[in-house]
Image: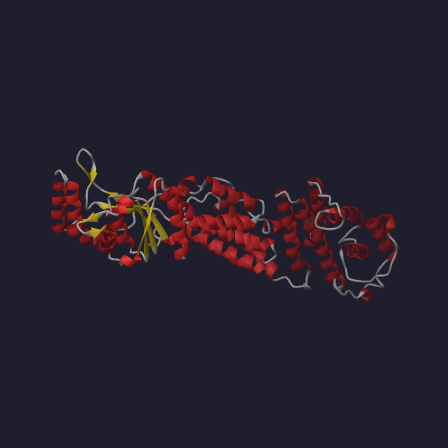
Length: 499
């Protein structure tokens, strides 16, 4: 870790510093030191202190708009951090005794404002009882609410006060998502190691989530991998607000938004968010140990190609190949949802893939629009015996021959395609499709009072048959399998990467 930058004192302040050290040896030296510091040292030193970098802070961390400080009997840290921050508003939390401190006739809050170069009106004080944990929690909460300033732009400085007050302020700031800062010292004097005036520097306290963020990341990855993208995004957004260096969490937010939009069939929004995520990965992932980035980069370019193809699909494609990306999307989404423990949704997508395959074939091969088909286009070509046989295989003993009418749907479309183009849909395919239709109709999202959730084995069987059927539109199964890779979502491998 780099060494902190401390002020190089000019000769005139070095002299005051030496006087300050000498006063520490006298009987009432503390009061004399405070008077010397407040009167001859603090204002000049505070200007130099304010120019120091915040040690340990990322370059992107902005200075705060508001500051919360714990006031002990040593008021110097509050004054210096306030001088460094130059906040719009300052909340000082202190005991009755610490808030009554004076140097000469000047009250402590006036001293802080004068040294820091801010208006006394910008300083708000809250008295904290003993024990004062609840008082501190409420004061920080109320201050954040009243100010309307985002917690990331409010720094909490727990340097002063007794240990319980400092710990309470740090906890309140951490839970609110406010960065924690501290006035530290570069030099200590004598056997009692007294901090030396003029060696102070501001530093950022290490965020516990930078080291102990395993649980948060695990929860984000778990939600993402089970296709709960809204929850993954919410958790990642919360982590963004609480990290000093949020780029990894920000990238996870974009990924969750992108794949969530894709999951909702919002292809343009998905392409935009995933494009932004790729930009973040390209810019930053090489600099950080993002353990999951390889798994995402492996598929992200293919995913963006797939979204390009999906965005170009028309309601009535000109060629069979033009409609295949939509079928591939359904086929890739179904096993993902099955792996996430959502078999009924996987069945619905498998059913939808077959229905759209049938619609696509009937449109491309025979010019039949699914909503308003002109059956006259196929009347002379249709073998009624094959058509009725297909109907019996789909509907069983309840099948009754009827005229071609109405819009094309799953069952009547499959029946018609099997009779007109057995190379697209064979009669032997219809038994499994009847099972798929039955499983879909019985699931909790469709018909009947008491639902029946399909088993994983059933879904896998129907999905395999659907893939086999749809592969015919691609010429061969290997071709479809290659296309499907571009439509598969990544899995985020759980490994602690916040460090």
